[in-house]
Length: 236
Image (cartoon, rainbow, N blue to C red; front, top):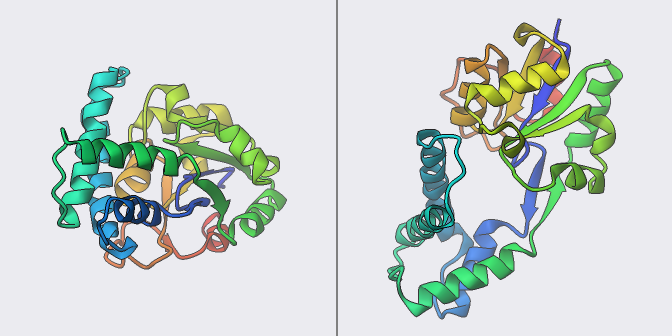
């Protein structure tokens, strides 16, 4: 019997508006570079992969400001490189770009996907324990309240609180402790195979891969759904 359902955040429950692709394109356009959001997308995907690998390879200690700045620079250089743009990291143009991106990113907001609240209502009506388990380090409780999601969640757990990020087992094991359930009594729903599926399995939790855009057709080692309203059928 599944008693608890844990959810990832980004691209599972919510998405950014405007998109990162749109903001990157806008910042580059202001520098005189006509790069479309579609051209930016592959670089962001590769940069996200770089960031994931950095997170996995690092210890749980807090990075120094210099280390974090270096990672941020590498991230942006990957985005630019994939789009065929060469802006040296020590140039004034790169400094202007990163400063402008910081301004634009501060304007981003989260919106829930249309299937989120209907799915939450169904699961809550089944008396499931519902929780957010995320690598986001913002004040996610406040965000959930603003979006009308908090009333459905029994708790919110972030990587900064635990001192470990998905896919490390510790954050999932902590979620089990908070929920008061065994691993066999929980599922975790997320959109990233390497982070959500692999991480859940490492803690003995059954994963469900949310594949909104049908990108993981080759995945067969866990249920794959296209909408959160499908979650309930995998809980019996």
